[in-house]
Length: 158
Image 1 (cartoon, rainbow, N blue to C red):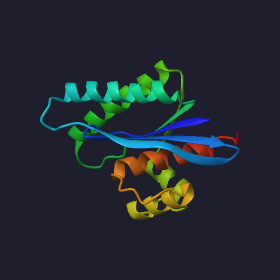
Image 2: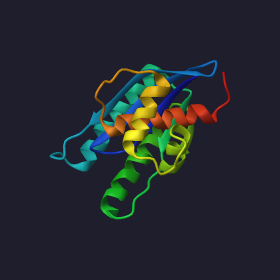
Image 3: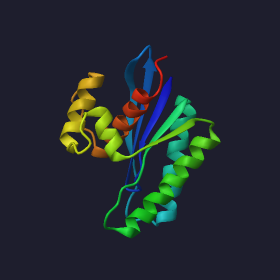
């Protein structure tokens, strides 16, 4: 099974492709799709959609796991990230992947075992679980990998 994990954002959109075979996970690809603050939001949305669709077409995921929003202060940012999530959901449904959504608490609990874990703890467990190199990653990319791992843990072994 191929799982696409996504950490939604419009400056940086974290993406990860995880393969689950016989209960074992392997990271096939991860990256951050970046956009410039110098261009209008509608263009950023278009760029993110185009790049995400390329990834979906290349890897043909069976499932898409996306992090749910959790905002306490900046409503403008929350609205824009909500629009990105709408784009992600649309593309997942368009390409007939099963969609799963997880809160940050659920992701941290699945990966670290503690829902209030710090970013560095999530990063450490992602590297440990997948036995991956110490490649420097943005937090968004690591969060996308963690989201994909959460989905893998919630799905039956295949």
